[in-house]
Each structure stands twice: as C-alpha cells, then as structure tokens.
Length: 623
Image 1: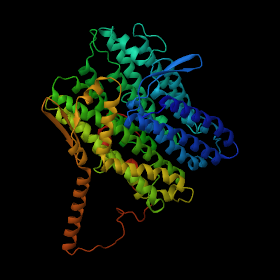
Image 2: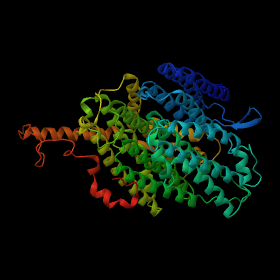
Image 3: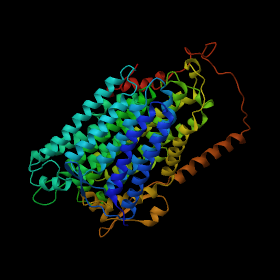
Image 4: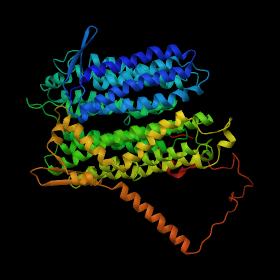
C-alpha cells in the first residue's frame, strides 16, 4: 500500500499543535465552542493517525525508520506495527475524552479553560511522539517533556482544591526522575551519542558485558516501570494524580498514558537485545523479575483499591493492579521464551497475546470507569462512596454503562477483561507443569480477580443501588447530557464486542508482532502458525509450533459461558415457579431502628471490614 506514513504523522502533529493554539483563544469567551474546535481538530488528527495505523498493521505498509529534521536536530522516527497499535489506542481515547470534555468541563464554572484546551492536545501530541520516536535521547526527551509537562498542568487543573497541587508536583518530580533513569541507562552504553536510533543503540550495546548489562537494563526498566505505575513505583504517584485530575484527563492518564511505560518495557526486553558478538541476555532472570513485579502489583494494587472510598482513587489503585496483569504476561512470556522447551515457547506467545489484549481492554474499560465516575460527579458533585447511592433511578443510562465497565474489569465471562486475563492466567498455569513458580503466579492472579469483583460490587452498589445521595447531594440529580453519554456508549459497546469476539483481536495482535521489526518476540510469532479453525470458532487462541509437534491452546468460549449462565438462570426461575412460590413486599427490617437515614444506613467504609483489617499490611489503608 502506497502511503506516506511519516508525512501523515507530521501532519497529524501539526493539527494537534493548531488545536493548542486556536482552542485557548476561543475558550476565553466561548467555552463550548473551544471544546468543539478542540474536538474537531483532535478528531481530524486521530482519523489521519488511525488510517495510517491501519495501513501499517493490516496493509503491510513500509515500516522503516526515517530521520526527520526538526529545526537543528535530526530525529529518527519509526512507525512499525507495534508502535502503530499503541498510537491507535492513544488516538481513539483522545477523541473520546475530547468529545466528553465539551460538556463535562462546563461544570467548572469558576475555572478558565484556556490552559485546559492548550495542554490537552499537547498531552496527546507528546504521547504520539513518544510512541513513534526511534531514539532514547533527543527525540525521546522532547516527547517525554511534552507529555509530562502538559499532563502536569492538566492534573493540577483544580488548583484551588486541597492537595491537588501537591499531587501534581509529586507526579512531575517522579516523571522527571523516570526520564533521568532512562536517559542515564542509555548513556551508560559505550559509544552511544545523542540522537542515536534504537537500532544503533542495540548494536553498541552488544559490546557490554557482566554487571554493566544488568545496570543498563535495570535503569531502563525502573524508568519505564515508574511510568507504567507497577508496584512499588505506582503507589508513589498514581492514585494521587489520577484521582485529582478532571475525569476525561483521568481517562487518558489511566487508559493510555501509563501504557507508554508498558510500550517502553516491551521495547527494552524484546527489541534492545543484541544478537551475536558474545552478548549474553539472561531472559530467564529478567522474565522472572518482571513477572514477579507484575504479580505483586496486581495483588497489592487490587487489595489497596478494595479499601478506597473515593471512587476515583479506587479506579486509580485498580490501574496499578491491572498493569500488574499486563506486566505479569510480559515477564512470563519472556521467561518461557528463553527456555529451550518448545511447549513453553508456545505458551510464551499466548501470554504475550494476553498482555497486549489486556492493554487494549484496560484502555477501554478503565477509560469508561473514569468517565462514568465523572458523570456521577457532574450530576451530584460527589465521588465519595460513603455519600452516594440510589442513582439508578435518576441516572439509568450511566448505571447500565458503569455496570458493563465493572463486569469488564472484574473479568466476568463475555465481557472484555475475561479473555485477556484468561490467556495470561492459563498460560502461567499450563507453564507451571514445567516451571513451578508460574503456576503460583497464575493462581494469585486468578484469586485477585475475585478481589477485583468484590471491589466493583462495592463501587457499583454504593453508587447506584444503595441509599445515600438523597442526604448528601445539594442539587437535583438527573442523567448527564447526551454529549457525555455518547462517548460512554461507544466504550461500553467495545467492552461487549471485545468480550464476545476476542478472536478478531487475537489475529490482529499476532499480525502486529509478525509484521514488526526484528526482535526476539517477532521471531517467535513468525515461526508459529495460528490454527484458523480455532480462531474462526471463537474458542480462544491456539498456536502450533511447526516441526515440533506442539500445539497449545488457551481456550475459553465467552459466548458459550454466557449461554450457560442464561440457561442456569432460566432453570432456577422454572424451579422457583414450579414450587408455587409467590413474592410479597414488606418493609425493610432496620435492625431495630425506626427509620433509614444518614446515620443508620450501611456505608462503603463498612464493607469487607474483616478482610481489610486482615490485609492491613498491604497498605493503602483509609479510615
């Protein structure tokens, strides 16, 4: 396909810059018009980027690194299938958040929107550049600073509120520390100069030996680990920053920005790996280490989330937990790929597919959760679960949408989180027949999904189906405007599609790795074949290893599981009716109290009290 990849990329960047110039000018007097201008320009840039990404991923467009002169600097850019996947999810969520912002930002009556509409497109631009720049020095620094500084001002938007500026400052300091670690690790490689492409860096890395190798990889991984929010780095900044930002920005921070850290981890471990020249890459060590950080992140982050009463902090801690699943998949894949056992190498492919698919799923359902909470905050002025409740009568559309998002993050079958988690967990459990610690990690990940479900029973129940808002809201509660509902409908539909039709995405992920530049993971996928009969029957993912007689599947049938649940409910209903039982209504027993009010109702802080007390040592405790 004849397409000017880098011409389109530069044009999209120019459009985003235009939005940063035009929208703030209008925002001073016509706030909604500024939002529409920002949306129109961001959407135009996103359409151009998505078209380019489609060509790169599906049409085998050329994927060569190209040096582009920006002022006095020549900067390498690379848009291969792998980077195109991440660019696509950033572009998509930028459109969703920009559309949602038009109406949502109107409830900040006493704040100017000039800074918001200046920094939003710059933030998106920084992420796009970071994902496509092909160095770890000049271009990387420009991209990182654009992304970090713009997001800093967006996080501190509500600067008059207590703690907001402090949270933003902490975020800025730690992100700059992450940048220094990545740059420092790169510059420790002998012969590396400012502006070297990642390919050149990898070549020069091949002469490094011994402990020096571990120092370089360690600095890079800690830097990208800080960005992705894995334990213990995420606890330092992520809950504070994500919970105080405006909700459409929280959706971008949690839905896509932390994925740039995942992108960096994968590029480091699978691309910056020299071959030959006596270089020794201990894939088992790094795989086990990364997988360990992943399983600790998913367990600790999820347990801490269960303790939260602030809805946005609950979602933010869950971002740490969900990043843990992704990092567990990456680490498990690297470890098994480094083993000579063909069986484990096939499982490595399944784990990597699960990690990338969960990256996509998390983008959608976590963005939806933050936007749903933003809608609740818009309608009630509250985000404290102890003060919410009963919104199902007043916000029915948001209730249904939030329920879909909650089912998705909990990994309920037929919703988007199920298949990606299942691929990671099943790969680890199957791999445990050869490597004992993997089965332990798989069991922990499986158990943690139950904690996630409990956490979102709390979020959904205490927001929509209990009582509480009637004593705490200061304004009439009603459903949010259509402009805020429509983006959520799109995300909710994707949660269902990604849950019911995962095989469509599996094929795409396999194509992404097969078509990306040379790396140890692309070599893995190019040497394997997908069994089309399995893919077409939507049963999951099965990969064959030619010549070895090895065929391994991570099989689950979301639609079939949904049918089983439906049949079970029908049978239960028929049993109930066959006994001649009748329903009757009666006043709710108030345990001796005469009436339900703010002092007698059940609050979020009382849920799972024994479990929270038992798990005090995991941190994140609140009163």
